[in-house]
Amino acid sequence: MNKKILGIIGGMGTEATIDFYTRIMNHTVANKDQDHIDMVILNHASIIDRTYAIKNNKLDEIITKKTLQLLSRRART
Image (cartoon, rainbow, N blue to C red; front, side, top):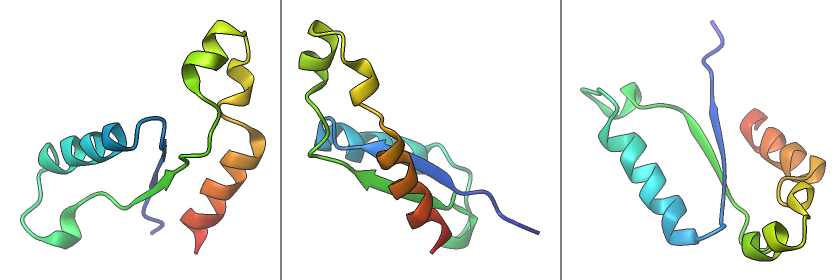
């Protein structure tokens, strides 16, 4: 059986990424560590500033193919 892995692209507010992870952990029914969701978090702090992207119609630069490939590689290793 292949267990699914949740991939998260964070870093657009590093503390928000930490908060999001904490919320997932706190809302997961788990009796032991192994019951938690397998996750890969890419804290992509060098990603384009989201306010700049919104104001300048560059939303396609926030999540790029390269970012998705990096996250995917991390999930497979």
